[in-house]
Length: 383
Image (tube, rainbow, N blue to C red; front, top):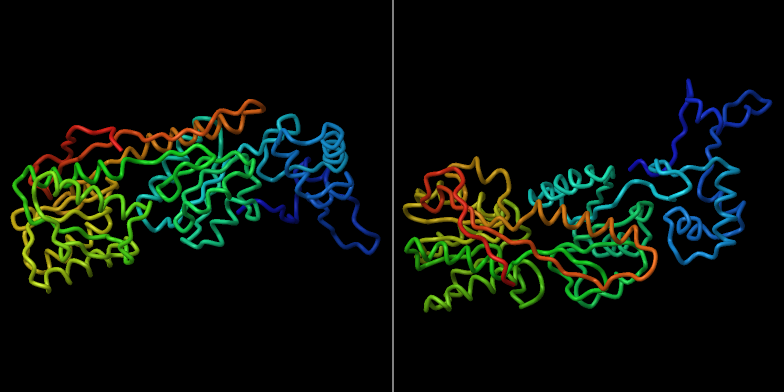
């Protein structure tokens, strides 16, 4: 991803010409762009130390830093992503590790983070971890290419509470998502429980009482992850309304893709269990469910009112348009970037880690009986 240097034949820029040695006597051309290995060899240090100097880590001995900078200058080494020069040691790029760009929420989150970073003249290197634990560990511990950036925004899917120690690594980082709480770094997350509760209360206000849920995790355990937190909010809303929870109306769907939402809805219809509303734990599940409802001749919202979660762009354009929870994605992105920049610029006297949850809102559309294309209701700032 544009981290490594690449040999370029043909006409070279003046900078490239300065980096090239004369061709060997046999007439063969050689690209000798210096690497981090070369800098480490000349300075007599490890590659990790060179990386620490380039990233301007504070815990490097002055004499070691001087040797590394001298070697960098002597060799004409530049990290390919760096436009900040040797004085800052910065690349001008931050990393973003997310589970899956196929999910609209993460694609739109990445877009929002890129736009927020551009306002600070920063680029963003995006890594898809594909929900793989080893790749998430590589992203956060430094064995992956994201450590060639100035800092990391990290949204894990497989790491959990027992992995909090992995975040205490001295690299500027901000945590996103709902897998780890109370960790050693700043955390920007969302109001999963209270926003899910508000979504179900929205359905209750329009007279629905048999409310199904699609998107529960297969193991149905009470853990700190989006699915479990949103199920908790669903149950809380029903409890406060005096409506018993019907386990058969809670449907597993994983991962949260359209086809799984459609499959879960088809299974619910086939089971013959009556329901008059659906809370889908994300919008892509809801979109799949809408298709299955249409195929079965169920009218939305007349027969079944539907609300999703995430307020992705596609929700405005589905037929009917999809009501959804807007968790404050753009605010999450801007806040995470600002916190990361603060951490990158910190030298000494670091602040304690902070947890920030932007306010959410319910966006009521046609799938819950609202005729307007965008009708936000009051948001919230609860847990």
